[in-house]
Length: 409
Image (tube, rainbow, N blue to C red):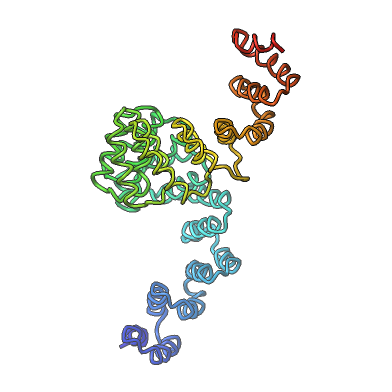
């Protein structure tokens, strides 16, 4: 038995002490071809220092091992050293193509994707191997060079690439067309990809594109497939519910949102949409409950407070509205609702303070101006009332109530 074979057997028996001994013997006694096979095996199982030692000994006999040395160096984070090994492979070498592909991977990993593309373009001029063309198209996709990517994906046989890489070129072309804003073409290629092989992500993206194009019925067919085949797919319930709602299927949309909330009770988007749809179904109690749950979990509570203030104000629950008042509210409509609630509770000084704060932001809003005019009247601020009344009548000239009030002033 050769020393290389003894080393492999020792490794498989987890006898690393003997493996080390057999490696030293192999380096002295085994022939170069046997050593090369041993190094490739060691590299494949992650014994990089041992593989590197063999490759360094074989450099003069097998210059192509510089590629292996570059791969090991990159695994160790020695990128500059990796490029030095690759530069040994000259353009007239039969292994130059492989060296180019490794260089492209290294440049891409280092964030130099433009340079990686240059290497892939050079590789594609040497070889039209489908995997070379595919690699070039993938880099062009990452650079958002969608038209170039489409051209190269189109050169490939979809089934061949799908079998070799697990990637559908139809899906990639669809994604590229979507990036170009050519959504009809994108949908066409996504659908071709799905016909050949069902893929959750592709089905979801197709449904979303159709939803964005307001083709809700077609979108819901794909969402339904996803819901049936993989109901654990992350995050589809929100957009599916919106698509169902667009088809006036509010009951179904609400059931779907409840399904999503059973997986993640803290999803504020689902809670807000469930509140909206419950309100539309005249279930104000459920609408409020969803909002209160969202208020406990949302990072940004501005929209939730605004919706709660609308709901409470509509139900004349003025104490609940003012209970929302705090120093951190930025939403203008929420502040206005709180001002109205203070006014309804005859806490006019507090209401006026808020109206004064809102006056700059809502100076051109006629409804606000009218409310502001009436509360100013409570305090007898006639000059300011007259000024605002004149401005209001420029916006709403046929409001006889404000016109009469201005005349009285």
